[in-house]
Image (cartoon, rainbow, N blue to C red):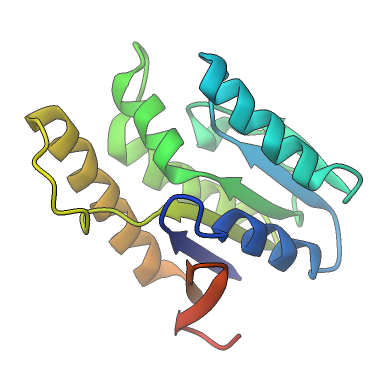
Length: 169
């Protein structure tokens, strides 16, 4: 099974994805993609660590190359989040770009029992962006569309409330 959870910043998507993953029986792996590169990132990482403390997640930090992630076969995997992963794959020296993200999620799907992927809603802000930001947004939108087509369930979280676009609750 594959669940895609999408939402804007601070929408409650992470909390929803964690609760969903916790509702599944079996081993739970939290696959963290945010590189601890500055104070803001460290603060967000610590917030997420505190949220899932004592809940039974095994945390694996992986910033690029999802396909090489050591995930136990049959585990329930929560991937948090595609936006960070794409930025790493696009802008790090040895990053593999958009295709590495899509190949990596396909590889995870082949190994795990249930994959829950958190991603950011993009392209509805309506602001003027420079070309590099527009490139990133277009690539993330492409990944989101591709993952939504593959997913068994697509859930958008707005103000902490889930809306099911595909699949049953």
